[in-house]
Amino acid sequence: MDGLKVEEPIPGKFLLSDEGTPQERGNDYVLGMSNASLMLASLTPRTHFKSALDLGTGSGIQSLFLSEHVDEIVGTDTNSRALELAHRSAQISGIRIDLRQGSLYETVIGETFDLIVCNPPFVIAPTALFEYRDAGMEGDSVSREIVSNAAEYMNDDGWFICLANWLIKDDWRDRLIDWIAPTGCDAWVVQRERLSAEEYVELWLDDGGVTDRAEIKTRWLEYLAPYDGVGFGWIALHKRDSFFPHRYLEEIPQQLDLLHNPLAPALLEYFAGANLAHDLEDDEILERSWVAHPDVIASGHTLVQTSGLRRAVALDPEVVSSYTESDFVHAVSTAYEGGIDLIRELIRFGLLLPA
Ligand SMILES: C[S@@+](CC[C@H](N)C(=O)[O-])C[C@H]1O[C@@H](n2cnc3c(N)ncnc32)[C@H](O)[C@@H]1O
Image (spheres, rainbow, N blue to C red):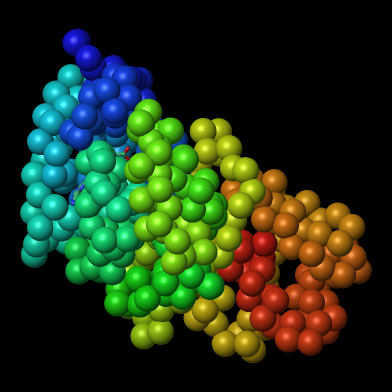
């Protein structure tokens, strides 16, 4: 097919996208399987769902993965070429996607979904160069709009998983707390990377294959000058009946092998742990029985996860040595002032599991 690339992300399922660079093709370039696409796919829980929304479907990569475990999929995009390629990809893959043209949530007003996935056009730039990555909205407001309005389109017990870029000024968490607060959902926000303005601009000029860059680079750096940098990461929301939702924002910079080690089990384990850590009273935590996670190595002064997010928690070596014993929780609570908070953290991280 002329000018088109064919990829096979799942055996027997095919994805059409543009060959070459965005600069060669132009504004309506349709992106294929990128690292960001794979990160979102890795984070998406693969349990059975009745309905899913793939916001900014592009080539349809997320929908292709969703077709393996979701009954009804709606894919939306503003780019008519993307929708055409997603349609052709679905046809040759023998799957059905309800494709709709429109911005953000405008084509699904009044509908709700069990799962929403979104790899938005999140690039923060003074001028929209390419539709696949620039929404043409001020600053990082496209990501904020998608996150802040998500709950309106989620069913109870529904999930929302989204990648994003955010502007950083002082503590990066403050901005993200404002984004997630209107949702009323439990939230987990992870900053994977933080780039300086210079690094950020170079990254996206390279990514677009932009050759004539001096003028645009100067304007872009001026645009980002009021900020301390740009963050990249994911935002996961879970809607459940809880008066005070739990919200946790953290940095996870360590390398993760997304292909061989999908993140979705770690995401589900995180929310299960966070629910317990948040919902249980102190005395309930202390009275309950907890067991060590089988994939954690307790050695020296650290507990290290060998799967999932590969977290490491530093503790007193004597406490670490009792990790697999029934009195571990007691050992933590007596060894540390405020030990109950530490125990909650270990539960949230999945380092302590309910027996
Ligand atoms: C980074 S691509 C993601 C493509 C694909 N979902 C993936 O995971 O690789 C973002 C997509 O959002 C689309 N888009 C741009 N502006 C949009 C808007 N206002 N509303 C919905 N989609 C938009 C782009 O056309 C592009 O297909």
